[in-house]
Length: 577
Image (tube, rainbow, N blue to C red; front, side, top):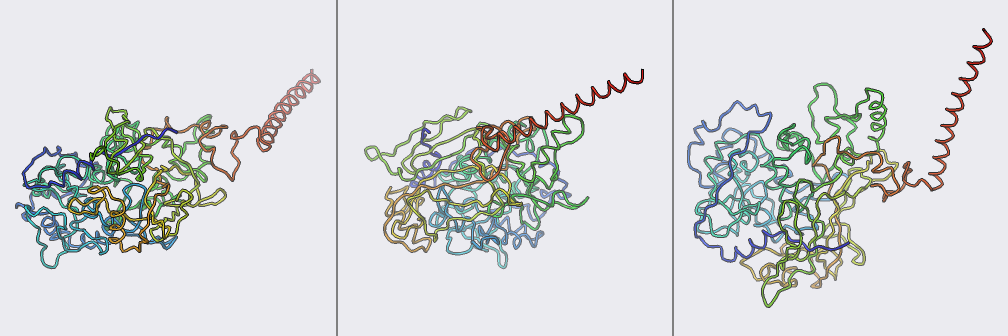
């Protein structure tokens, strides 16, 4: 396998530009307003609300206005995973969420908060050692030339309502201001969370436009996880803003035109569907007639017997496909590849090579061109080497919905590749299904004295410990461990890692789904799965030969029975003449 070196480019420009973060005004053109999501039935026109007929000087001021009507929204949001970044897994007892885990991409949030919390669903969270603020603060990364928001007394205005409900299309968060939007005057070099040149957000226009969430609301954060377009998930990219049916049959604008919330239903801001608490199977299915959906599963719409059984040939095939649903997840057949639609995904990230300089200058190499012609970084001094992939065939595994993480306090074996998250499931388990995953390969820092994963402080243009400023791993790791409150031996190294991401978006049209021969073959897609017999996978094995003999014996029996009936009926007919 040839290792391409990859890097997400915007973060480098951001890190360097922020070193000279000045007050010079700069304006970029805001996007056009998106369409109102399908299914919107609001009876309120927020542009007519008296409390919104004013100029706002901060995001928290808008939230304060929202709460005059939506009196319970702040409390609901503050108990959601999107706000707390914390989830206690009832199956494993582990405390998970962005606040606690280390991944194979950017690593950790602690110590890098103003940058990482730019996508938090709130304002001003700049210290992971404390819960997110209820009253908004601007954080340590705030440019002092900008107006500072002042919380209203008694209100929990740190929730960002506009991130999810703006329909003006021009609301965004700044990349380094702990969740706050860029406002006039926009400092020179400031970027948005999508890596674009920042523009001054019109808060009044945004507040008056609010409505149901659209794909853009969710995508502006989730499509750019890990620092760039489709870097992290593989099945969530900017291609889903306006996808074709070939990319996603549900979200296609000329098809069903689903928004994210069509599947990810919510109640009191608790949104269904999370990789921390995945549902590998949904035996409840569609439920009783008229019963509202409460899960983000395929079965909740399509049932557990989704294939048509009418007609002779289609009916036989449908019956057989329905027999697979107790062993195979819908996504396995209906998402044949991820990173489709022209946007590549990162498949390898090697932090150990970061820090190389050429006569004191940073190195940048672009050796991967994705199908839309865009050249992507394959090495950059700030982050190391990368590989990318498009139309990637998933990694398949038995999965019962339980995932156990290697947490920062977990003891690891550095002589082996460390599994960042272990997926449970096995053949024979009635709760397990064969699922598709993105398997991310990494090489990242660890504490070689205590044999545990290490935190690292990479972002911080005003510090001498941030790796992107000084390229000194010793300083960066010591500062990261201190910020996280994690005991550090003072010794570090780099260890190979891998991480799994369930693949559940980019559903292809039915005619593009996997066919029988894609799996039932000697070198089929499920070749690496053990513990069960699958016809066609090993035809020359003892089980395979026995199966062939049984089929042949059955065929001969049918033919023999038919011939016997034919000749016996002839004989009886002749005797009556």
